[in-house]
Length: 127
Image (cartoon, rainbow, N blue to C red; front, side, top):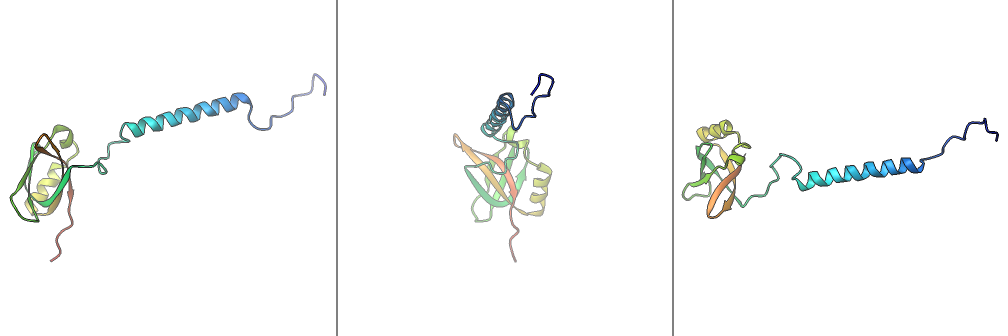
């Protein structure tokens, strides 16, 4: 090999390439970890609640939801916190109330108060 011959082509990654790749992988792992610790997004469908009540909505407002349980008994009232209200479609819930369609009210109980955190459609009764 003379001084004017080009260097042989590289086979594989050199040390700088490996360091860059390792740094990229570390940054990606850090981003994934932050996302997982921060909650992973805005979809609260998998959010755990203290309990749930299945029944027909009898009152719907941005401050309060009342449901008549299908299991019977007295109507159950829930307050709606501003952060939970942002996730609810009150027009849809009002339609459920006016059509007497069953709903599932998910709630958290804090200091003796029950707060509706989510309301889902319940299957319509057969019959």
